[in-house]
Length: 288
Image 1 (spheres, rainbow, N blue to C red):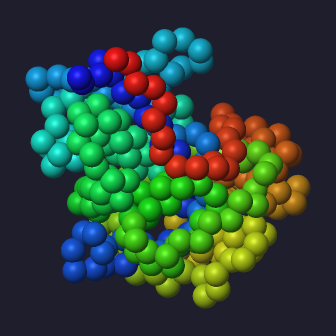
Image 2: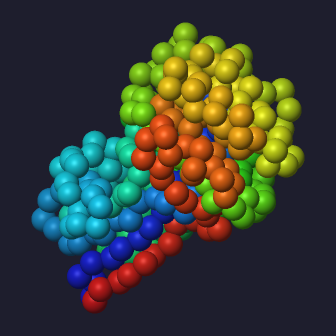
């Protein structure tokens, strides 16, 4: 018997630095780099339907969720690949297109919930492959799906979901972020000139510690040419207060670490609080 609905959650991912890797096909195309899987992400609820429908919501200040969008070409494409007709409702608290890996989180949570709803019997790797290839196709991300399969601070040394990933669980304190607006990811990932500069900024070393991670991220954002005026101001303030911080990739914003980070970021705008995630995608509820 098909359930009435299934709800799944996938954490987001803040990328600190990356380099595109072009393979012969979408499954081997992706990126290498490092980032943090975060406790905030996307919750997707799917229900049986005659046609595919998608609504993206964000809860404003404790009220009922407000609609943001009634379409998502990447989600519709991934569901079509499964031959699944479902009604999808996604909810996220963080800003979209701001460097939090929400497109990957939406794909993984929706496909995981759809698999359970329809009893498709897909393995986690199969779901991740579809999500990753969809991200590559729509230029909405390169390495977030691979990272979001688990938790922790991640260093990815191979592209795609089967690339080598080292996960360290060494960030127990709060993570805070501030955003100044979206960066249209397809414009950056689809620009050969921008990708060339990004590739040249890639750190020569792999971070072994959290401190080295933030150092590599700062080095990358400065050399990549992606830092905006607003980002530079926030990073300077963090430096004055010895708060580890870096630019969100790809988003016009900053993420910072530690108990004092939120207070330093607060003068620059709304502060989003989160933790390092301990795990990846999971089913939250099945309503029979």
